[in-house]
Image 1 (cartoon, rainbow, N blue to C red):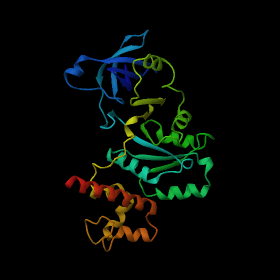
Image 2 (cartoon, rainbow, N blue to C red; image 1 turned 60 degrees about the vertical axis):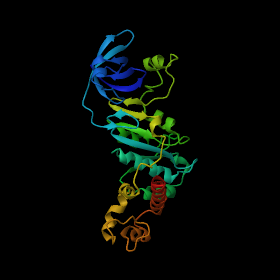
Image 3 (cartoon, rainbow, N blue to C red; image 1 turned 180 degrees about the vertical axis):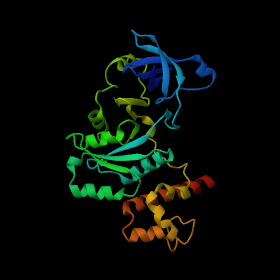
Image 4 (cartoon, rainbow, N blue to C red; image 1 turned 90 degrees about the horizontal axis):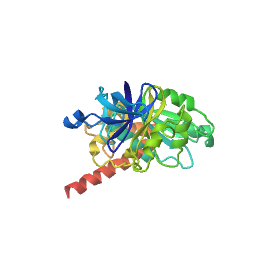
Length: 295
């Protein structure tokens, strides 16, 4: 039987199987001999060893479409970044940091602003314009009023989505709106995991419906970009690309150079001032970090 690993703790792997059940599994010894570690997100072939206690063995790992290093997880298709449109006000610099992190791992991004029932229509429009050319999909929802949930769920359907965002923005409420049932809160898996010895928070997949999963993980809490070179940063601002041919220098950083197409586009309102300001802040951070490394 095939299934997907939705959680791994202390050598046990919890597999959401094709029959809709969740089995506590061990990996076959051959994986250890070949130095292969099953990952959350892996699609696997499994054998049921104890139907009564819902236990099994992982026999083989199917082809991995992708692998993220931090956190270690397989077969993620996209990222969903959740922020509040107000209460708290969105931190656009933080959003850009999240976007860069996800882009560096090759993940398309959806930016979702919750609590839209508390904001005026013109505020939605202002925020949408900031990210209009960022290459990301932007959604506005209200978990409280159940607004925009169906359109967001359509973007997640049939995919495994990594969830990220700060606390206080309603992530849990939003996930509960999207789920058909609370796979991670009820049933066999919570009984097995909550027996007392496994209490550490780990990456896990939440089964939303069918082959649709959301990954909530502690691994996206670190937002340091210091392993990024300052000259690479502009590559993570897609809206700059169409104006870079107008720059005098091929190596233009779009900061203080003369004849810069990106800054001219900014002056003409073709690039978001918010995005450009975030870019300059991050560029200076990376520049200072490179100086410290040389000292």
